Length: 86
Image 1: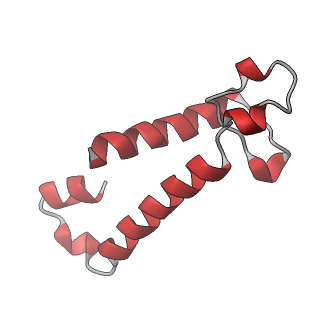
Image 2: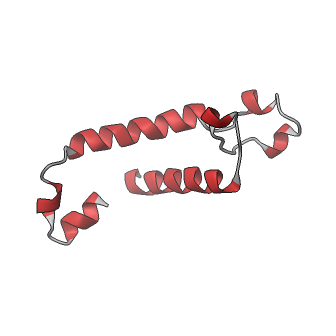
């Protein structure tokens, strides 16, 4: 989003924001979500039919709830991060 704002010539909208800090936080959140919000095999083995959970995402703060909209949001964020950084 910040890159698009810059491309459109509206840099003045970003003057009050620390973009370097924003990128650091963005990277931290991605790493945190992968570490704490994705079903690794070591965690999935405690669930019924673990093969269905491996590689999925969950909301830890909501008792490991796995809903399709949560998975869509986590996955789209991860894909956008990957496409932007690589």
